[in-house]
Length: 238
Image 1 (cartoon, rainbow, N blue to C red):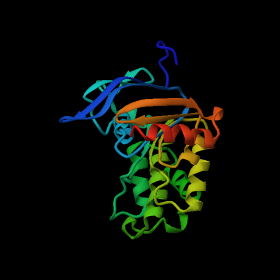
Image 2 (image 1 turned 120 degrees about the vertical axis):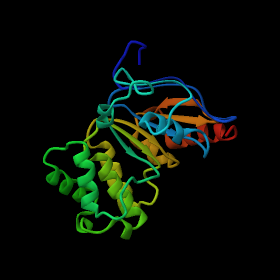
Image 3 (image 1 turned 90 degrees about the vertical axis):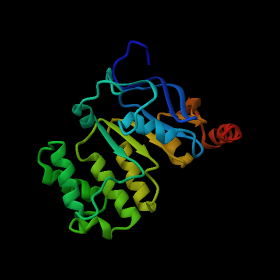
């Protein structure tokens, strides 16, 4: 992406420290509108911290994150939240509410039109329509992950941030998620340890190590075996 481009996500010199620990160091990254970027790396590489800063859940120590030209680290307003859907380790579901009530809550938060129809459609797609009246606290880990995906999508965000979304899902759930990720154009940042799936669904793939972006390539230019060799080479550094 050119320096003048304003659309999509643009990250410049992003740094995050926790005391003496440097979680991110001078990250520069561009994700164009409707681009799909997968980031892989060992535990502690900084992937989740990067995603959390983009989502507005973590404050950076230094640097910029621009979404469609707006600096989200400085003048973030509530409208930015309408553009972003987040599926992370925390489901952000209310245990004492039903599946349906959770989606109602988030849908009203985002002023979603025809909300009941939207909820029913999403629950059908994630395979949870039969559990719509179940309390979230009664659901398995995989079921909660399905509902959390519906929550992240209830306002149909143009930007989707996913941190290890396959965790807890069975094969059917993984296939369902794969369809969600490819059914329509949107800007997606996926953080995962699942190298084959991460490579398959993305336009670009990157490797993080010790808070730095150390490798980036176009996914279609790589076979899995070729990428696995590259990953193993960088794994020595992790």
